[in-house]
Amino acid sequence: MTESDIKIDKEGLWYYRGAHMFRKDILCIFFNHLNIDESGRYFIRLNEEVCFLDVEDTVFVITAVSKTKDPSGGSERLEILTSDDSREALDPASLSVGLDHVMYCRIKEGRFIARFTRKSYYQLAEFIEQDEPDGGFYVRLNEKKYYIHKR
Image 1 (cartoon, one colour):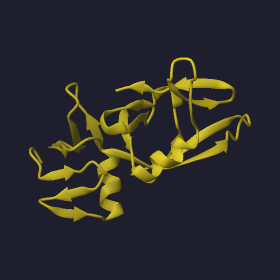
Image 2 (tube, helix red, strand yellow; image 1 turned 90 degrees about the vertical axis):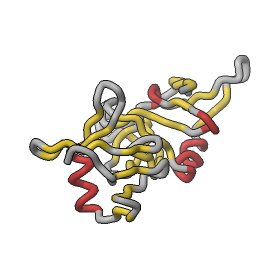
Image 3 (cartoon, one colour; image 1 turned 30 degrees about the vertical axis):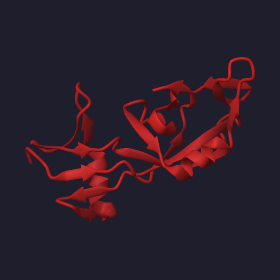
């Protein structure tokens, strides 16, 4: 696996030579072996084989957002569901907005950038407020403001 015909579109859909890859068991293996090099190129390493990916935007997408209480301390948090079907607490300090108002955040302990789908963006938007003096946007959690940065 030196070069690959695997492509991932901006919605997080995987394709092999144009055919949609939909089997969760195979995608799970790929997600578990996913890496990113110093230049930002994504690749899968299985044993000694390396397969680089053609990625339109990000490998991971955020598919859902919900507000929950942290089980350990009872504080509020935003929980996200990612395209690999894992759930984690959103790091609100990692929120950024790119071209066409597309929202991003860091996931997997900051290792990867994920793109919000339209649906998850609207779910997140319920928690976004605007600062009156300067017009900046932020998410408030536990009485703390987390400003959304430009990407």
